[in-house]
Length: 358
Image (tube, rainbow, N blue to C red; front, side):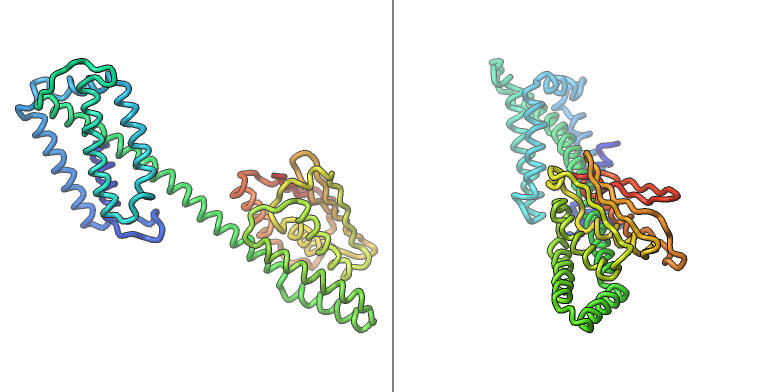
């Protein structure tokens, strides 16, 4: 029953028109009917064959046990099918060629295996060739090989589908992460504040500070565009980008915004998700009071396999409601990239996020 089910599935899938994603398989009624009919015909064929005069009263059991007694043949069958299943799609791009190649490979491969079992290769048993006995053994080996091939094909399909699913899910999460990262930067409030700061510097004839501000603003966008398609970046590069972003914020908050960095030099060679520090600093600014009377302290520290970003908690009365999108995207990036979770802790006085160092 299991064999008929798997063969029905494999046949229906092979008749399905090519789609952009292999997991988008939805068999039609016609495909199911044709598949079931083909499997029934196959079952009638081998049932009639095994009950024919070619097989004695004990049926296929003597040949089956003979095959099981040849360890070399069984290992060759298993390894040969693994190699062919993995290489078939690379060698034959067209579906028709793949089906023809599968049929020819199976018939030829089974013929070699049958000869090895029949003559007891590689040692040899001196058996004389009998067409009737050879054909009976060939039929049994062919049936076993079909089962092995179907199971391996199913295993490869499951593995590839899982890999495709993870890849598509990772692409979706990275796209959301990049969108949220750009939205954090290219939003009316950020541009409004940046232009106001630049206008103030120009009005005050602070040309050097204005020029430095423009360069840092450009470097911020350049870094984000450069790292848009990268999953991980060195902590040293991420920290340099964060410092430029902090400098922009400190032009806006001349007093009341303090950042402390404590990262041992050897850990700078570890990797993190790009722009994670910038998003965490942005969140701290967005949700907390920043003033000379109530300074906001942000601390970036690393120890062992963890990078910690923390700030004192002094929530703004008119702060926008937190959606958690930024933290959720960072968390998902780490899960997709390394399967490592982030830790978020909040107390009455402090908010802390711990990121894995990869």
